[in-house]
Image (cartoon, rainbow, N blue to C red; front, top):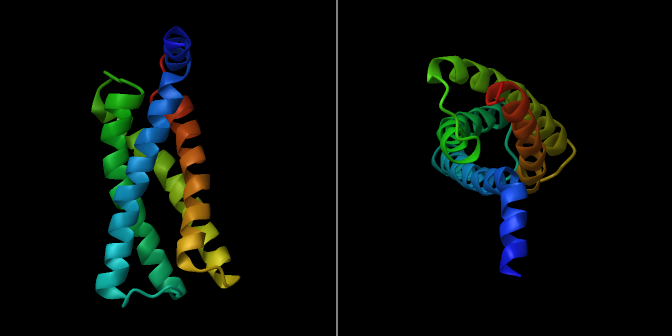
Length: 141
């Protein structure tokens, strides 16, 4: 049994660690987003389009900063110069920021509350971020 677990860990380590880091990144980013909502928007569950945009930017910025360092260190174990990785990482996250903003605008316009819309959007963003990171940012040549 232990040998089977070790085999599975060896085979899927990157994906498992990515999911763990993704959950931690989501917690940190959501923490910042909902703290901002509490401090500046009276903890609304139905933000205006402008508030939604600001909340997405707060969520994204916090997530990108946390995710870059944790993905670099724990997921992809990169030793490449940060100067070449950071611009690609930020560019890939800009793409998922647009995805998040669009999904949030559509879902909340359809009457989906902020928490549910954020959950749906976050799942899509995590998948997109992995694909970009694996293929574009931390790809081993």
